[in-house]
Amino acid sequence: MTATETRTPPARAHGPGGRAGRRAGWARGVRLALLAAFLVIFLIPVYVLLVTSFKPLTEADPSRAWALPEVWTAQPWRVAWDKLAPGIWNSVLLAVPGALISAVLGSMNGYVLSKWRFPGADVLFTLFLFGMFIPYQGVMIPLVQLLVKLNEITQSVTGASGVFYGAIPGLLLAHVVYGIPICTLIFRNYYVTIPDELIEASRVDGAGMLRTYWSVVLPVSGPAFAVVIIWQFTSMWNDFLFAVFLTGPQSWPTTVMLNNIAGAQTVPYSQQMAAALLASIPTMIVYVLLGRFFMRGLMAGALKG
Image (tube, rainbow, N blue to C red; front, side, top):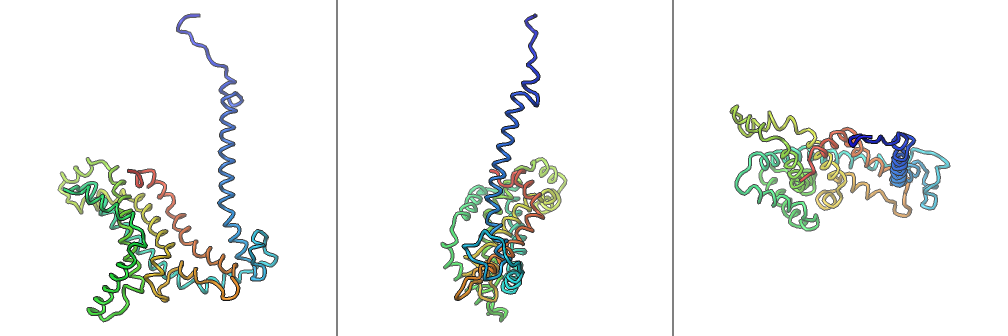
């Protein structure tokens, strides 16, 4: 045997039936078992919600939460829809334009802060980030005072009353302003991954800031827009604190209407479970439609940095 000759390991040690193959099989089995266990834990509340929502009020009791309905009925879903429908429509009026406006503002902010830097850009970006750490409770009083003042100004100019405080536009404004920091952060970190050579080539061709944004940056921004739209839509749809403080009964969104589905003498568990499932359907639809782009946005750097 020469010095350069090497020995070939036994094939069965690395083949499908070898030690390495058995180790890989065990690791894969453990991973699948853990994933199955987490899936079961995650689906337990969904199971309780679903089976309780199809029970009549006489069967909807916490002591029988695990049992299947003896009599299946869709009556709780009909009652829940009648009570929740106005709130769902108000939430649509809030979350759809609010998510789109937040995405557009975040995109423009992120573009300027990453590709058209100016003196003090880092300080301004840091101040933007501070906005993410201000709790809702800390801004409620000045926010209410601001919206009341906007009501007075709007009424003196147009004659319309209650445009901002107590209505959807005021709640939308609060969410858009509060969402600017996180939207700016997502877009700024995403645009940093775009090569500067593309921007420089656009400048050489004579394009200005807006033309470069429209023709070069915006066409490749789909994943970041998906991340921001899902984030802001879910945040606005599930918000309760701003909604209960800043809107009136005619403008209550889904979460406030859901909180009000309660009986005076008995708790209608089946109606509450059906209403909870109805309230969660729009956010699930948005994630199903944009989920693929959401993952691409995350992998492309939208939440890095």
